[in-house]
Amino acid sequence: MAQISSVPQPHMQQIDLTSLNIQQLSTLKSQLDSELNLFQDSLGSLKIAQSKFQNSGETVAQITPESEGKDILVPLTGSMYVPGKLFDTNSVLVDIGTRYYVEKDLEAAKDYFKRKTQFVTEQMEKIQALGFEKSKIRDAIVEILELKLMQQKSS
Image 1: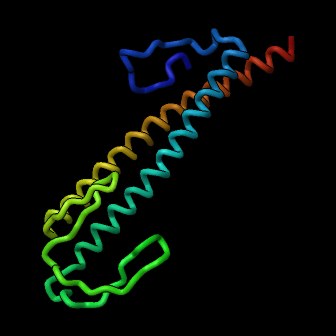
Image 2 (image 1 turned 30 degrees about the vertical axis):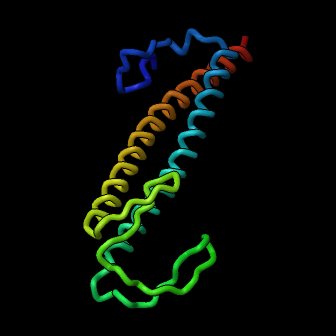
Image 3 (image 1 turned 120 degrees about the vertical axis):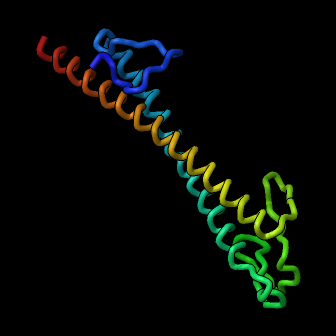
């Protein structure tokens, strides 16, 4: 129980949790709860971004030279659209963030969305791994806290 994390970290100090008092364990548990909530919020935001990149990539993949001149709905907001027509099926404008747009040919746009989806997925995997480690530490703290509370009650 002295070593909770399976991944040694040279910049981190190892602490014997059984040497901490009840107040210190409670504080540490609260900090870990806050971090776990932050990880969950971050994962939610990344999942939304991942979905948007995937949808954009799928949409670009549907544009073909035969699509030229077809009717489309152009989103003005999340719930308001206006009718339009496709007139250039060789390139698209890609929102790269903070209101910057780049014109890309279809293959470059597909590659961009594929890379962005892959990057976000990798970040999600890293956060999930960190969350798993923090969750293991939190569970150990709860276990030791319960033992100390039981010892305190029996004394």
